[in-house]
Image (cartoon, rainbow, N blue to C red; front, side, top):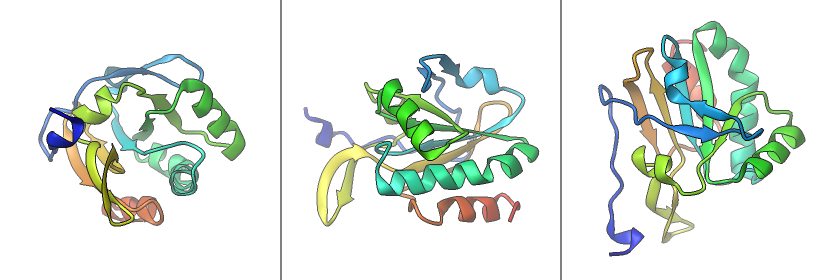
Length: 162
């Protein structure tokens, strides 16, 4: 069986968020459990230092203060190495938490890795997705195949923060 034979799991409101502990841009372990008591936005993106992913990360960084005031932390997950995440953070002045999932285990657990359309072709890769996780570790909202541009503004509106 190949990766393309496996349809990704899809999470929805009420599901328990898959737990994870992954290294951040400084190779420090970041565990979802350490955010209990606060809401967390977990967003999955294909690759640091690419145009769409940069737009999304810069938008999340710009919104981070308002989101934090509303009790929301942000974690971005990609298959990039911690070293690449560090370069991304420094080059783009990002203040959000970026974590590395090179084995794509967490991305798969969130249904954010699998077959997708890219320029009209079916490929296997990271499916740009965003999840809002409540203070008890349950999925509040799950959005798959989100657009990089304008997504943070839409999320803020959906959360009543715009």
